[in-house]
Image 1 (cartoon, one colour):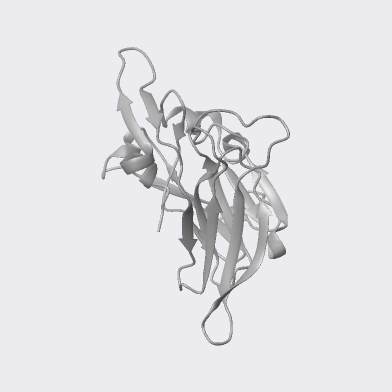
Image 2 (cartoon, one colour):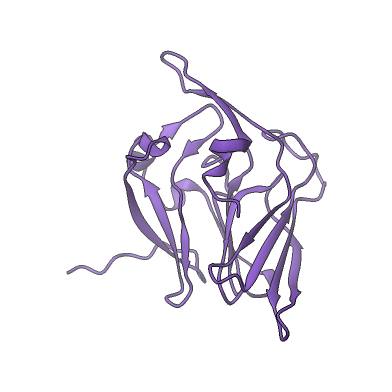
Length: 203
């Protein structure tokens, strides 16, 4: 199952460190990707719009296609909804709730953390609940601590849905060490209905 980390392993073709500059990077063209819910009951398939990563879609062209399927009686998958996604080429990653009520995509292919589609929440029947840019849930100080390359700001990984609580749980990088195993993270919660940052209760 594709994860937010795979651009570094395959799609993220390379990083070249340049003294005094942001590291240069390159991306491979996206492939069709399927993301399963934790219990395997639902799956979300993204068919990219055919274009080189990092380029811009021609005005009026269709975006990538997203299709949600869930198991019905007999264990067979049946389509729940299908729609054009708001991304230009494809999202970089996605998560799906066990019920299929929510699908959340992350970033634009080739533009991690630098587009208005850093977090996109789709609700029941594929309705667009909210689009968030990085600045909508992080402060400038938090963003400045992150690894930045020529195309992207590598802001986190391992995000998950707490559908019972109605929240998206984001794992946010707290330093430029996202690429190493020693990287540290903090969690922030987003309300799945409103797209608003959930404030932690004071003790």
